[in-house]
Image 1 (cartoon, rainbow, N blue to C red):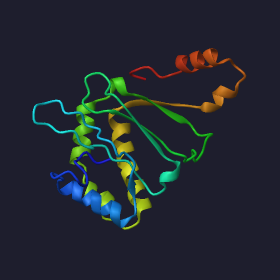
Image 2 (cartoon, one colour; image 1 turned 30 degrees about the vertical axis):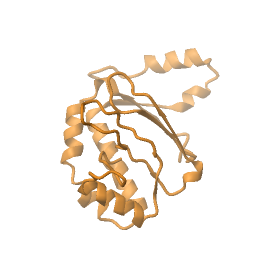
Image 3 (tube, one colour; image 1 turned 180 degrees about the horizontal axis):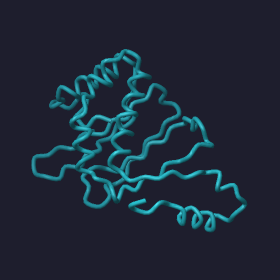
Length: 175
């Protein structure tokens, strides 16, 4: 995801936006979000597409936009795709976004050398893998998380009991 006025007809596409645009053309990628996602919140602001979700196979993907949550000036975006999980038996990560160090995470992403690590490769799959690695490394460093074994759901327990079982075993802060 690039936070920039991407593509055209927007007259103020910046240099990172141009690089992203060229990358999508070079690798035959299509932008999933076609509607405006940023709601103007100040006099003189214009609505534009700030959130980019690219795909090489549009047929199995769906995008839905809803109104902003809370005081956000960005529409809520739901993206679903037909890619099955690679390993359904592995542990799932539960992220505790409420305890995230968002300013540190922003600084981590802003200071990261994206061009050198991610965008100087020719293979789009490797580029995607590297972007994912960077995003996850930032999340792991600045957002509290724990892992959940989904096999617990197959113990024959009812759903509420299973959820209570999992909650009781979540690590608490400081452990």
